[in-house]
Amino acid sequence: MTHVAATVPIQGLGRELVHNLFVALRSAQLYDARNDTLRAAAERFARTLEELQLVDHCARLEVGGDLILVNDVRIRSELRSYSVHANLLRFFREMGIGGFEWEAAPDIGEAARFVSVVGRMELEDEDDDPVFRLRQRLVDEGLGGTRVLEPREEEADTLLDDPDKRQRAEKTYRHTVAVTRQLMESLRAGHTLR
Image 1 (cartoon, helix red, strand yellow):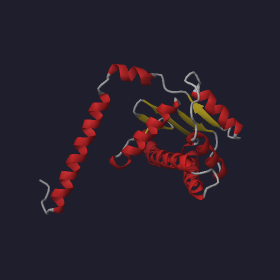
Image 2 (tube, rainbow, N blue to C red):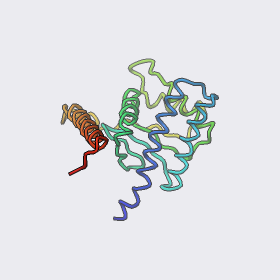
Image 3 (spheres, rainbow, N blue to C red):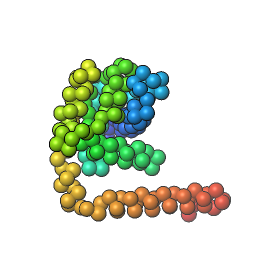
Image 4 (cartoon, rainbow, N blue to C red):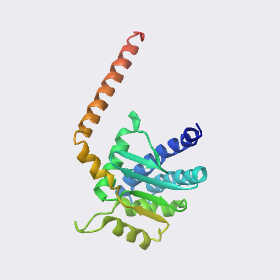
C-alpha cells in the first residue's frame, strides 16, 4: 500500500515531464534557444523537473521498448497522451539513447539550451556513439549535470520474443478508440448505459 501511495505523485509528475519534454524538444526543433516560445516550454519543463526533485529527490527519465520510466515508475500512457508517448519513444530510439538523469533542476536558460542541443542533435556517422556524442555536446554547453543514459539492453530481446506485439497493441488501441467513439455517440443520442 505504501509503494502505491508513493508512486501516485510520480505518475502525475511523470506524465507532465514526458509531455513538457516532448513539447520543449519540438519547440527546439523550430526555434532558437533565446526565442520566447522555446523559453516558455523550457520553463514548464524545468519547473516539472524541480517538482519531481522535491517530491522524489531525483529526476530520471528512461525509455526501453514501449515503456517510459520516470524515477523507476512506469508512466502509463492514456488515450489523450498516446501520441506524445509514441513520438518521444521514437525520438529516443532514433537518437540511440536510453534517457536522461538530472543531478539538479536546471534554470530556464539551462533548460532551453538542453532541449536545443538534444532537439537538434543529428548523427553524422553511423559508427558514432550517440550517447558519448550527446554527453560531449551537453558538457560543451555547460550542462554537465545531465547524464545521458545508454539504451536498455532488454529492448532488443523483447522484440525478438514477440515480433507481433506492436501490431496487437495498435489493434487494441484502434478498438478502444472505436468503442469510446460508439459510447460517446450513444450517450449524445440519449441512450443510457446498461
